[in-house]
Image (tube, rainbow, N blue to C red; front, side, top):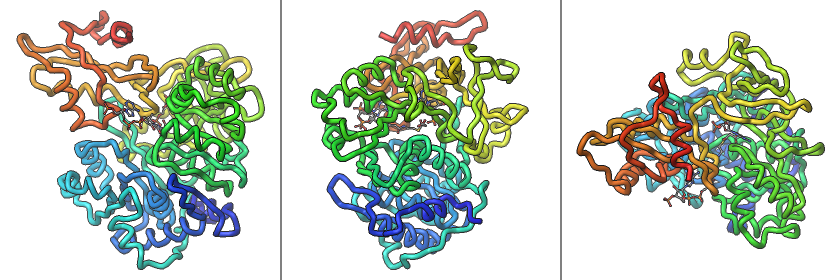
Length: 501
Ligand code: MLC
Ligand code: AMP
């Protein structure tokens, strides 16, 4: 049996290759057959460029049907896909290329020059471009290739994708996901949310993280459905598109922005059977306002890069605001105490998970991987939660020092390391403060050497050249001292309180 995730997709795809898979904003339709044929040509082109089974293929490209086909091409060829956020700056990309050592790198034509030092340093064998339209050297290389390519044989544990997630030490870790991980989670979601061939998903999420790449695409691909495939989220475009959609997925910011549109009402949403939110906490306030205005409850679910989706509110039962529902099939969740033993409902503890969806460790970090699993094999999510008596899980905090801004994760340590090397900075602390649009916003607090000065705007501008835009602090405050507890640890809660206004 072939456990390649694409084999499962092909087995469940509509019989007629002319069936539509996606429609872009300019109205062009891509059928299943067209995307699959392109993925075959791309798989040939990647192999011709030297990629072999298990090699990494890294991509930092705009969201286009070509980018989706590139992902599928990697599955098809047995290559390991490594997607990168388009906001990453060259210094960040250099780390990923150095760490993952891909055989092939695909980038945007306009960033090719800026990335050249990183590409050379990582000694990448083949570099291609993909643009925001339908061109690029990768397409040129694929054009003359055959439309068919077998799906590479894969075991359930064979690596399919590496997703980098930032680390508490400041170094990003590559979460290794297997074909079995993708299949089990994809099937669980199709079942839980009852995706079918008549569904039309409004897909406005970016393609380089678990939410947009897996959750959204896989629900569609495994059910023969189709999607309105938009380059990015825009509330007005979303509002105008809802009449043609049956399901929408998004991070909470999407719903906050939709609710800010006066035209967003019951009539506008009447054709949509399901609104799904995840990647960051959905405020109870947003959940309630949505229900009042639209007459539907947003379905909130919980997941992470290391495991795909973990829990979900029910499609048919009661959707409870402020909770993320109960474990998805094939997936065990426990709330554990300091001794890694399950606590009863009502008690708060560390969320730990086990199941076919859980990843196979961090790329080339066996030590780090060991630390994140308990002795009895459960993965420590770093989230803190509590089950209620009916089995609904609420996430009440995070043991990891993490900020989630507009659905993107920001690890304070990474920003602090950048701040600490600036001239005149003695030390720094980065915290997340409540933000009406992004949920949380990144704010920095720094202590300067005696007599040193800091220009806030220039500091922010400097950080923008080193860090992805969503990681850059919205404000940099200068203080005489950072508040510390008796152990000398910086009291971030105190800083959040002080700068939360
Ligand atoms: C953009 N900006 C942000 C930001 N996104 N600031 C903080 N947090 C963010 N997330 C800033 C830019 O720096 C810029 O600042 C300004 O906003 C406009 O940039 P933009 O690119 O035009 O923004 P916009 O298109 O409005 O993007 C906002 C957004 C986007 C919310 C639509 O961030 C988004 O799509 N987020 C989704 C993230 C996601 O898919 N997460 C899933 C991870 S998977 P300036 O100063 O230059 O104007 C995961 C697992 C799971 O977590 O469970 O799903
Ligand atoms: P990532 O590393 O990008 O995969 O982000 C995973 C993290 O996002 C989880 O560990 C949670 O902290 C957070 N997260 C995802 N979904 C939710 C949700 N519905 N509510 C609260 N936090 C969430």
